[in-house]
Length: 475
Image (cartoon, rainbow, N blue to C red; front, side):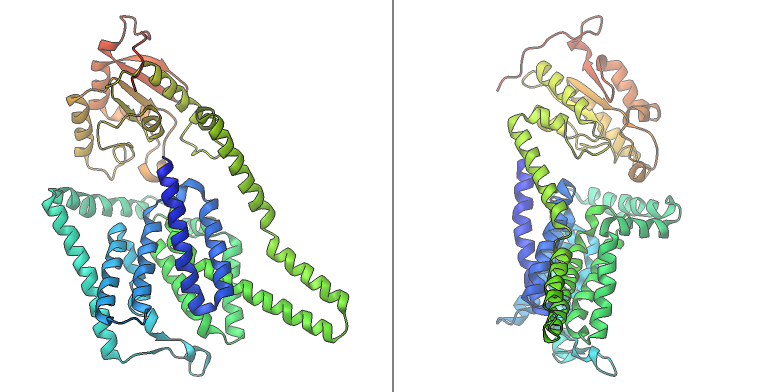
């Protein structure tokens, strides 16, 4: 599991470099430094929810594509073709990346200096004919990536699975968010406010007003446009999961960078004015006020970081105790009971025994060192109305071919906003008779906990269904 964290750290270093370069080009190094700090803080404070999500890598490939187009190096057509290939990687990570395409093919060639003049206008920095050729090269690279991936799926024998997931399941998955969410527009607004926070929304509005009033839209305009398109990329997913805002955060962090520099310049101008008037005490108080404005989030973040390092120390001392008392759990995880399940399985599993968890808790697989015997590691894709019934039959068929030694059934783990029903995993067996019959025919109750039920394959159980010790797992 540590590899996910390591990849996330390396990704954060890479994306911070990209955020700095992009912001520096439009707003200068001071704003770029602030943007890097803000974006990194957002990502880190989100915890493991944002780690290694598709959106994070999507943005990394987007920035690579943008920098290739914006570069002044030789080999213009080759650079643009490579940019298309990089953007194709973003597209295959998630299709909504296509919303960012204008930022790659158009933004590097726009001259915003005219937006502060009358009439306001934006011009291309190169002739239209040259731009069309370069844009065509980007689209060619994107098409090449699309074709290569499709050919790979065909050769790998996954063509039918690709069509099923992308053309049948995915549209149904997206459509249900619109169909089954009451007052969807209000819900989308509240989800946005929850993810971004009111301070960021106010900061964006304040930055727009400042740029407008100070005739600074030439510098601020590209970043504001990028933030709008980044949010469009987020919203196009329909569901507004917190990690989806990773396509918006870098650009919104740039807006914070711009506002921070503007505030500094405003305080500095006021301090100079007070100095000229001879009001030295007022000048000192102004800088104290600025320091407080800058540092108002620092105590909370420092305390949060200290808390996480304490948690790291607790994990180092005893990982099992750490997981059982995890301070930031998903409400459906029930870590104390999970650790009881893991402890029981460790004592009773033999070297080649398999387990299957009917729920959404991969920690049990990780901590027991066992792989899921079917491709359905989580059952969310099986208990939801947007999933094909064939998937449930496939799962039961996999288990019938090689019945695992233990089955773990979760309780109180309903996720209605994804599954569109209120059943937890155990309750869903009432409408999944094939699996319920399989359990009844081949398994006996081994341990009944508050949030999990452990079943043991019949040949491993005593006549009374008790807990007969098994040889310890070999290493």
